[in-house]
Length: 335
Ligand code: P6P
Image (cartoon, rainbow, N blue to C red; front, side, top):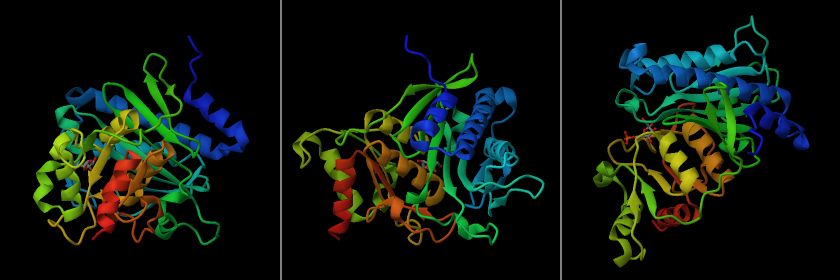
């Protein structure tokens, strides 16, 4: 049996390979992975840990916070604030940025996260996860503020997610492909189980919340109707549909076997470009997908090129198998 490569060894080897990961970034990623292990333990306790149900508060998005949303957010803050690798953090669960307190050393990185994506699935034991994105602090000495976070996704230096499902898996890119690690609970460490995930350019599987169909605009409706028409329709093949309601679970399936994930603008809230958040959901997932040979757009442009206007802004998301993303994007440009 091949030697089991731990996350630590993988990161050290990436660090030595063309000096690809500075030591501070390696430390950051190991700390985030350790925090994900702690979150996984809390998630796995479920009702036995008293962590299910609502927390009795709302987040900046106006969404009901679950107890585990807050627990996961606190775990990530406490794990990362003292190490000297970060200047600040931003989270779906916090209105403003969290600047590393003066009592701790500051580093050159910014960490953004959705601490527990898919919260609506927590109480029904369906896969959920943590999504994270790492940016570098701009080179200036004016201190850190929200504006430092507003960098396009192509500026990321690392991105990943952890799925808390039948296995606990960590998926990570530092710009050299996409690696998959599976948590070995006996060892208590993440072990490399796939070192170069690739998304097939074609697929027969789409992920969309079909209950929103009557609210979609024409390009999205056209794309889905053609899929539904199957082999007798313009696509000449039958499609399957999957929708977990957790972006991490749907994206993990796509990174593992291909597919296209679609969460478009819809007319229920016409002033919002979409439901998903650019900075800590779409950007990290878009980079992972591109690093695995897929594509990610907002229907008009590459997600990673979108200049952020605000920390919690939303975006339409079409990501996955390259040829399918190109097709649905071309339908938008025909408008
Ligand atoms: P809907 C979870 O709340 C989330 O942000 C993503 O993880 C998921 O893909 C999407 O929303 C599900 O949205 O409208 O189907 O509940």
